[in-house]
Image 1 (tube, rainbow, N blue to C red):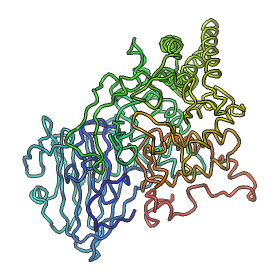
Image 2 (cartoon, rainbow, N blue to C red):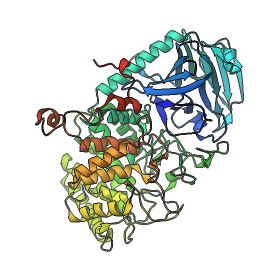
Image 3 (cartoon, helix red, strand yellow):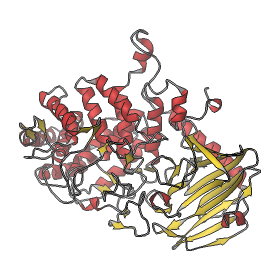
Image 4 (cartoon, rainbow, N blue to C red):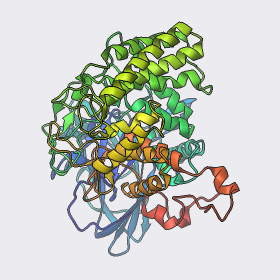
Length: 635
């Protein structure tokens, strides 16, 4: 991605993500680290420039004297980022950023650590290195102490250490100097580094590259849109906290859903409703280890509670905090408030029961898993099912987490039906006829209520809540979840109605009615994928493919999607990379893609054998998905 740097810094969602299963950072097109939470994904942002408004704090960058352009790209099939900075006199430097991730001593090595290598490429570049950490969500580091090769920043009660082979005084004073040799910065926990920093960073870089290349090699990707699916899979992997298996909804907090709206939320948590979509995406990718770890997290949540499920959990499931406002951060582009924690954890959202059972059902059918589901696990799931059959007619906050109203939401009732239906199927597999009959009967009762009270003759569609006429895109999941066959006239009519009423400039709103904060402005990207899948299921696959291709154009410069997009401008809004969106991209690509067999064994006249997404190498480089041709490894 090429960037001219003649204008003052302005926050943007054109950022790349790097990470290692413990921490993750966001880096803009000019190699400025603008977001990095420590000591883990949901921690205090040491670098918070993304949310600092017009305040120059919370970042790490390399300032090249006379810089006129910057070009950033991922090393192919990795989350290692390279940026080329070029000065007006032709001098240039390369900045390489990564978080170490590889196997060491037969265990995963993924420290709270970010490594930045700066290399002169051409001429005699003069640079300055600026490191301005914060703590407590936006307060500048209290003080710093210096050693011969490190700076120790005191950030509240914690400390962050920068170890470097650059002159410490240059970094402390942000002094400009001539870069004549490669230099390295290692930022992380307050622990000394006992080896040569240059050789260590070189080794870690190569081993981290090998880790990601090997991981990608094991993916079962679609034939078409391969680069896009691979980047989505890596982005999904970066949202994983490896210790517990948790997968958070996004790496950020409080990116507004639309310009100048108070709809700002902390998404560094695990929503149980994500389980089905994430497990489905991981399963289709063949990423069984990640899927297994995520299932471990979910079953831990299930087995640790004798009370109703919460919709949201921390990455350590019993580690939750109340929602609060961070007073020291202005917000993205100055649009606050910046929230820490999420009030949704205290809401009633009855879809959680079906979401968990739907996800954990994988353990009863997937023979690849080393530990299959058994009767004991089934009994624990039945506890959740009993909540579902008791609560499906009770009002809740719904999938969109309304803060000012309660209704009997169709999606919540649908997932309660899913809970009972899947329990009946699991009981059948386990040879428990009495439980089969019990859960089938419960499912049928819920089904009858949905068919009667969620259908609107006035709208010719299923609606978002019982006995209400407002449309809601979540009902597009009725066929995907097995409630109705796709060719059922009611589902076909619903798909038509949703497309007619909720589309804006080819992009899908969640709903069009006024909510707690007024009329919604942004399209919700997950709903766009649901609509695409629904179109494919009702036989409108060509139309679905066109919408999918158009949606891929909305990705940022590095191939990631956030939560929302403005239908008028096409600009991304909301937290990113959004798990819902990235899983949706993977699932839709798998649904729409031609198979490998059809593409290569079918008639050449009928099939263009060039996969979607690989037509032109220029497209990949321009999208930040590949490195220049001279560096491509084509073996």
